[in-house]
Length: 455
Image 1 (cartoon, rainbow, N blue to C red):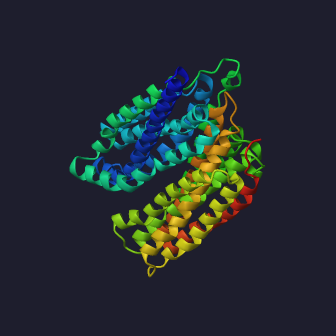
Image 2 (cartoon, helix red, strand yellow):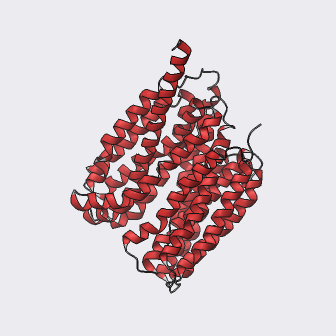
């Protein structure tokens, strides 16, 4: 074997180890995120912290926004290795704080650290994929990263429930620590020889920080969500008004200004990601609630109803990888069309006579659409990342995902809260969420016409 062949084999082995490390880290974050939803009721009851239940969920999401912006600019300045280590460290600190918490405020602090660390890992992974793998292999890596969420979605709720019941809720956090350390060491050791440091001239533009804008945007989103959840009309108006004043200008500073009209290119890609995430999660987050309140299903069945969508998402990712020659605009349009069909197909779940098994299969259509859409748009976004600004592009695409989730979570939660406080039927409130999701999917079909590879 000559020296060139040996070097190629060595690089391939390093790439394989790095891919395993990245997917494993993604799976651990996904497991922690999913497990917390199962363990949180017990945590709140044990620590008498029901008053911070919603804040504990929101804190993670808002810290995620700040973490992804901070990590993305550090990746552009210093390369991805150092911020990757930092994000893993912050995530682990959050796990340890939550595991020893004696009060709900301490759990909330732990969640802030977890959100900041996990949020930063997403754009750093984007940077690593852009720098390590050639364009023709990136779709496969993105598909693996997407698949990293599937197994936790399937096993985390049941496993977390078992751990909470048998060992105590603290072990939901403690148990992840050694696994996170092991996978982080694998990824860090593999990336060392694969990622070259960029010189200071390339990174000169990255010296201007975007962190203040991220913090103000996060604050604005928090005020918007608080306003949507408030019972007092004056507070609703005040919080939403203040939230918009803070959020919109800072959103425009962090994202391309023409994202609002989905201008052809990167702006259209970002607009599609935000619309897709918002539309999908408008359904996926509330179908289990419909199964519970309208059908009286058990917790196990509630989770089962949406598992099919997670599996179908993985299938869609695999299909898009195998058909990488298809124009990204067509993949995006197809994805949104399937999401729209899935929304209409799943809507009968609002009727108590509709079989939940049918809902399981119906919402697989939406998951398939997300898989077909997500990988090609991620790959297309890498083409818009030049040397030294990969972190910025990766941060923007994951910021679009996070905001789509946050805003529709707030709006959807508000309709449910109104139903809870008034005589408005829950089926009508959830039907409103489904209608909003359909509108978002239609807007996505329109925006997808501007999605294009950089030439």
